[in-house]
Length: 106
Image (tube, rainbow, N blue to C red; front, side):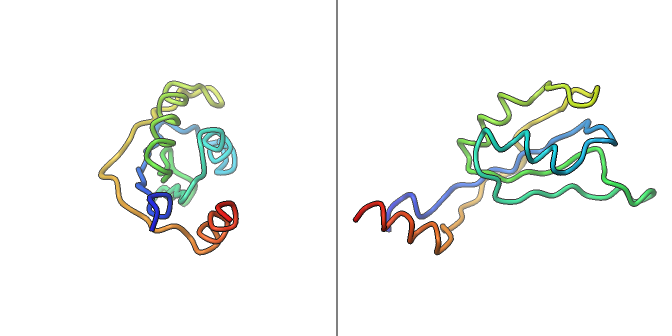
């Protein structure tokens, strides 16, 4: 198994998200830094509306790029607070990713 089939993932916390920022807008901000493995924006308990923070999981190196690029970025009038959060974890590549890698090696 090559190292590209196992990936270290890092969770990035995004805080100070304005109420009118959509999930799609947040995802679009992260896409230039790399592939998003997971995205979660919890709902506020009292209102049931999207909260002022989100979690984005990306490959560790891509997460570092996103933090450097987006921390302090002003979106709809609010400067985002973007930081690496918690421990990294490993993920096995998806079967489609392994097939694509094998095809490029052939």
